[in-house]
Each structure stands twice: as C-alpha cells, then as structure tokens.
Image 1 (tube, one colour):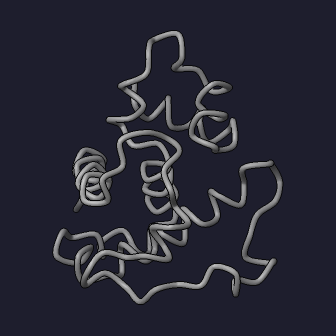
Image 2: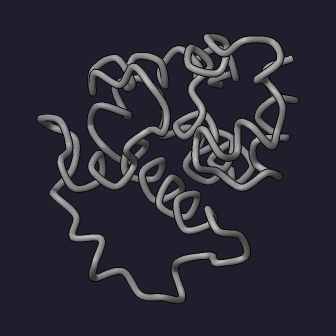
Length: 139
C-alpha cells in the first residue's frame, strides 16, 4: 500500500517534471497541458458549476486540484507509480490534492514565520482550512 511519504515523493517528482519552483502551483495549466502519456488535454471552461466548490475564495482551485489528482492517479504515469491504489480512498485523494497544491518542497522553503495557515492560504491560493491541514500533515 502506498504511504504518505511515497505520495510526497511522487508529488515532488511531478512538480519537478512541470518545472514548478514557486507557489502558487499552476493547477489549471497542468490540467490543460499534461505531460506526455498522462491524459488528454482538458478544457476547464467546460466544467459544470456543480463540480466547483465555492465555499471560500480559493475553493475552486482545490476542486481543480482534486480533479488533477484524479487524472494523475488514473494516468499510466500514476499507475506506474502505484497511485491506482489510492483511487477509491477519498481521504488519500484529498491529501494528494493538498500535496499537489502545497508541495512539501515549496512549503519547507518558506521561512518559519511564513508557515502559518493564513500566509500559506494567500501564497499558495488555497483555503485556510486546507492550508492548516497541510501544515498538520507536514509536522
């Protein structure tokens, strides 16, 4: 079974493949411009409004992150790394989406004073609740 540490490493690999060095992670462009052998391009303008969560200013980005996580898991790239094991585990899928939005390498690169939910929310463009959960996961 794939564990959290393996998910973190896979996330960091994906972030490196896309050449992402600074937040916010460009979830929308990652969905629209997949790497070779990942998935078909996605026109996010065709997503229904019922798919997008709008509880918070940044909630739509977390909805897209969950969609990206699903695409990565179902891709041949993800299957080669054993990600298909988490496809039916909603908790792990949500954790993977948070990892994609707030990769450990980018969070750990912040100063200690910047590692708080409010600052991470603005810097990574994620809801405060998700930022808080991610910080807890990284402890």
